[in-house]
Image 1 (cartoon, one colour):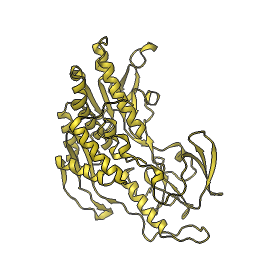
Image 2 (cartoon, one colour):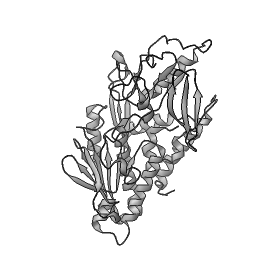
Image 3 (tube, rainbow, N blue to C red):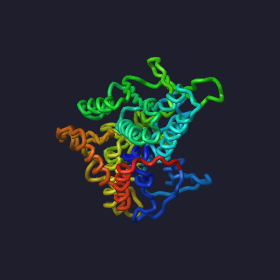
Image 4 (cartoon, rainbow, N blue to C red):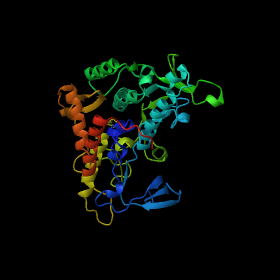
Length: 403
């Protein structure tokens, strides 16, 4: 499984890919594991229809109790040209293979821009990088990308530094919408001081080819709703989430955004004690929570504690937990590159018992961000590897190998 908060760091070589993933088979006590896609659920026979990812053979997995934790996928909002060019000029930032493709594309753009016969116009297009979305992932990647380009790429491509352009596009009126306004303003100002073009209240209307010539179809541009046009070499799309097809296909009740409706105990209505859902694919419509990693983590801990405390006879439905799920907000944090970060402790606690703490910016927040995510690693192996790669990238620079 993947530790997604550090995913932007792997896209630019600050960390290596193996540092932020843990093999599922190493989980202590794991009995059976299948690399397959769930296709459907038969609640009457209590089986999940699956298809393996290698030969696409179909098989059934019986269950007594079922937990649905499918996460979510990137939402393009039907923007023309985005999904068609995904994996090429447009990249998502949700999985590890996305991160690898982003690194390959960045280096490809620099290598192509350094060729002697290329025109100035094409060089500027290749070195134009657009990040779509104003959330923590987008801001963190933008900061990482800026550091990678200014600290490493310009060292190996010094003649190209004046042609580089980074643009952050957000359809809403500000960055980091879930953070304190003062922190959002700080982040915006910090990024702008590093010559990052930030366009608020700006949505991408389409991505299309610049030329009608099929031989030059890889040259693309972004069309914004205000009518402006921006050619680019790479667009990283991290603007929203939507449910995977499996969740959409289920006959259970869905919330307004397509997430599975659960009760106060994370149970699917009508299947109490049998089927549960958690994380980005589940929502309690009476007390909705944002699809965040910290929410999913607490969902998992709550449900695991409940299941471990049960001792059902004859595989009967599990009893109702003594307490309903209650989310504890530990605060929010993000790093924005340049050895800077932000910490938001203005809403810490559960429900009405939240406390209003301070906001922290700068180097202290950056150190806290790194320390917190290092401490959340599951294996000792990754707790050793991550600081090693941080040190390596600081002393020797980030890895620019393509593989």
